[in-house]
Length: 151
Image (cartoon, rainbow, N blue to C red; front, top):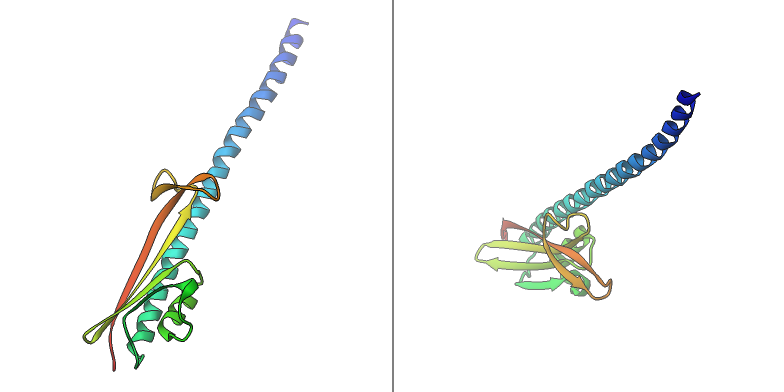
């Protein structure tokens, strides 16, 4: 009789222990999944910047009326083919683009501030966001491409 009572109490406590262990494990798994997604988004944005710089440099290399210019994609002159091609390739309005013509070489620099949540302790610089009323991490991404000016 005593063994049955002891066995019943033990199964009840093990059920609670299993629930706690599952909750702790699921929290860790969710954090790991979101961390992987955040790293993937960071990598995607870095590759987008590399591609945009290359597209912008190629467009600038064949542009007959090229001049030095710097702009944010949200406010760029749509008549400027180099900025339009670069900003369209990035697909984000908060990126900055600069075009520098130096002799027979044209360089396109592209920059973007990527805000991250899960990469907070590992990369970037923290700053207070008044709109969100929270700390956010800003990772400064940049890329440049240089090509020979063909005109």
